[in-house]
Image (cartoon, rainbow, N blue to C red):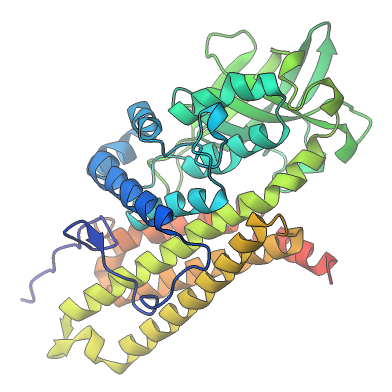
Length: 410
């Protein structure tokens, strides 16, 4: 009987003496924006994920959410809020630093911490639109890990069509009373701080939306967390339903201050390109990891008397996958450079989200095939990557919506 090969260690990229092996086909490529400080950050982030979080992967998947202690540890190391100005407790960097963190998280196989939302999205809204008082009140706690951040847009009756949200906020004296519900909220089960999209003008569509910053307390009247949703992938990351029944939010929590009422749709549209770029970073990281895993497996697994890598079909599949990954990496880096200059437009961000997530699903699927039956068992990282990849084409605006945004620019 042919012995069953042991699963590869679930800490890809393959680690030797603390250093990761270069992705085949990308070993001669250097990001145009990368500096030595990014390399130092990458090493710190990789060490954190591999030593502090990945060893708990099985338990975290079983419990269905990350540990708060891991957020606090990340904050202690300065890994949260990397693009937040230092005066608000952040790292004083820019999106390139967030990209390095998210890339390393994907490369190590760590999938519990919702850093893409917490640091890649939530802190960005506060830094861009918050009043001075709001920034000083919330950003330091997000950067320390004392607070976990989430954003609430999607509702049970609609997701990508933000203009059609039904959750309403009615001004009553010094407060807003919020009524409605949100679903598929990443970090929702643990979140302490929620940027909530609401209708403050029921007669308007886009021009009636505002963003409220809600401090969540399970004991607060009018607020209730629903289920921590069971998903086909991303089992260790919490995704929850949130319900509001005349939940009281101080008017001072209107993101941007009193003059920002009914400007929420504009704020969302300005921030969505970065959200889609965040998704793209994860997509390319997953593609690279899949190629690494499949290449290593093809070299150690034999069939018909020789390693899989010795068969032409395997080599052709890997050649296609690494080429798609290389092209995707270059496209992503071009978008990152544009974003750093403030020039990433809606259509190009939509192209990135569309192309990179479609590529992720294709590459992971083809790499899984190289593993044969073992690729369908969850003890192998590639199987979990396959399940995790599917949602990338859904959240942040479905890929069908991305095509519509691209078409409008033609």
